Length: 234
Ligand code: ADP
Ligand code: MG
Image (cartoon, rainbow, N blue to C red; front, top):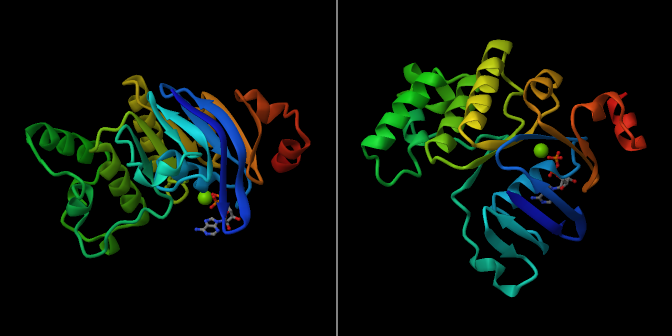
């Protein structure tokens, strides 16, 4: 379980996350959506502890992070939660294989087995010795996903990663995220792809202008209760 209480985040003087409180079930799939600039990526960065809110508290798998305290600077990322970036951030001077293994200190036999399984599942075995700029966007997205999965997180944040995938690749990612869920690894996915939402979302969260406006099951798409979501869906 992830519990956020009164999370606020500023970029210079602009309040980008406005006193957000919510719970995330880490065994299920939540879809976060909303207009561009509403703070979705910022929220994912805060949840992965890459970036710190100015105030509020997070509880991630029973570790508590209190951003109201002055000790915030000493916070280390929590290995149980990991983020697949929208911009992917693959290192151009490293091969795809080296990119996937960048954070692995001990490439032991169990990691080798996992690497083999992941690269097969994601259909990237043939491009491992290539560099990212010799790979298609869909391949790069799958390399970035493999780099996160090899770390064996318990919860994964996906930031608009299916946007450049065709329907076959999108279905592969849908299947992968479902398989992960069956193993108890939930996800928070930022997407506007209605097909992905219908196939995957256990819960939907609509965000606008730094606030959570509406949340619920798929019924909120059919019968939104807030003016904001109604007008967003038009
Ligand atoms: P979304 O992912 O929903 O499109 P973002 O979280 O990327 O939204 O951005 C939310 C707001 O914060 C936007 O107004 C954006 O311009 C601003 N913002 C995002 N990152 C930064 C940054 N590093 N510095 C200053 N402003 C930022
Ligand atoms: Mg974004």
